[in-house]
Structure formats: C-alpha cells, structure tokens
Length: 304
Image (cartoon, rainbow, N blue to C red; front, side, top):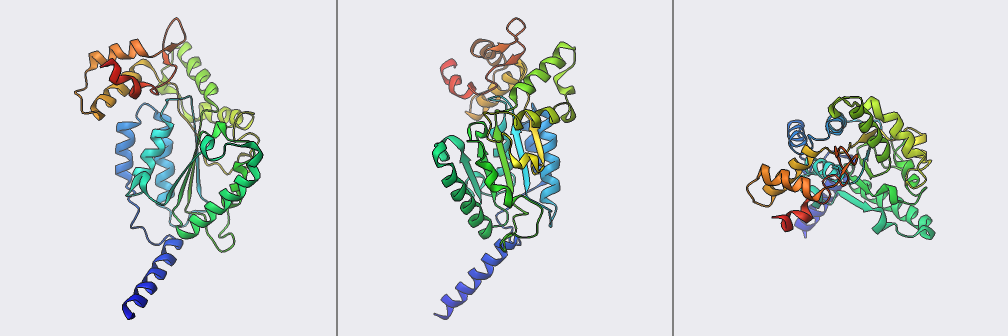
C-alpha cells in the first residue's frame, strides 16, 4: 500500500509538471533535424520551408511565449500541406502522429452538419481545454478548413489571445495548424504572373503573396476562416503559401514515392510517368501540375 501511495504521489507530480510544460520527455525537437527534413522533403516549397523553420525554431526555443503558435497553410491540392504538418509533428513529438498530445480534426468527418455548429463549438472548446490542461505542449491540426462551416473555428479564439492563463490554464505553449485549399487561386495567379514575366518560381517571396492570401481567405465565403475573428484580431501568426508544382517537382515526387516503396528510383520512367498521368496548366505550355502530387501514390503501382 505504501508503494501504491508513493506511485500515486509521483503520478500527481508528473501531471502537474505536464500541465506546466516542464516535462518534455515526449518532445524531440531539434533545429538541425527539422532543417534537414524540410530541405530533403519539402524543398519544392521554398517559402513554406523557410517560414516553418523560423516560426517553429523561435517558438520551441522560447520558454515563455506570449501566445500559442498559429500557422495557416494554404494552397491547391497536392502541394504538400499535409506533408508539412506531418513533418512538423514528427520533429516535435517522439511518437509523431501517434502521440497522444497531437490532435487531428478533419472538417468533413468531425464537423459535418451545419445545424450542429453550436454543439461542435462546445465540444471543441471542451476538448482543447481538457487536453491543454493535461499537457501544455498539445498540438491541434485542423484539415480541410475550406470545408469547415464559417464561424465554427472562432470558438477557439479565447485560447489564442495574449494572456497568462484562462480559468487557471495556460495555452501559450500549444500549437494550432490550419490546412486549407482556400487562397489557392491567388497563389496560382501570382505564380503564373511571375512565369509570364520571365521570373523563376523560386523568386516569389512571402511578401509577394501574404497580404493578398490572408485577404482572400478572410473574404472567401467557402472558407472556414470567412470573416473569422482569428484573422480580424491578428491571431494567425503566419499565412503560409504552398505554390503550384512544376513538372520537375512532379518527377521528384515520383522518384521519392519509388524509393518509399523500396523500388530503385528511375528518372526516365519518372519523367515518362509525369508526362502521362498528370495534367498541366496553362493548357498550351503545360508548366504547372493541376493535381500537384496528389495522385502519384495511387497511380504509381498501375503505371509500374
């Protein structure tokens, strides 16, 4: 019994440390590790890689942040938004996406009915409050934000503002990531404009798209961030663009998928596949991939 009592006291101390963020045994953040994985797996998104690297490094190395880190990823399908979120998770939590401190929400699956938005708000607030109470370093990922019912996401605003604690709980070490196709048309147009002007895609900078991107997302009626108070209150730290992919990016995606499946990467077959199964725009020039790299994994087996 004495041993059981000691165990209980130890667990209570452990929980108190988790809540304060003092226990980091489940964290594995490494600046070099994140830099290496972004360079090797997200190199095609030069803006996103740089912003993610700087934002996460600054946040994770700050023992006393002013507010939670809020990142919003935008771009057309197949441009790497989900991949980027997975790389972040794998380089912060030792168990990656299997960590109990990582919480993934899909708007279509978890919040399907418009008539139940108020119920979803209550449930979401309760879920975030409970999980951050248990662990200060919790992460919340919201996928398909462009399919979320407008107004729903605003319920998490109280957890994002600059304050020490809310009802005795600090949310300042939590991370929120939004994934959305909204704003993709702005990024596509900007990328096309650069190409038509004879400029390389790599020349596009964050300052070239960030203002137009945030405005587009805010005014998009089909976006979960439509007229969101999170944007009005400047609580989203970075709107991160994922640009359309060029032909050579698709070839690289195919090579990576070959390697992931234990196959010998074949550049000639990858080039042939990129031409045969992927559609490009503009129609005459065929510079940028319509589906990004979205269909590569499902089509590779049939092609091989």
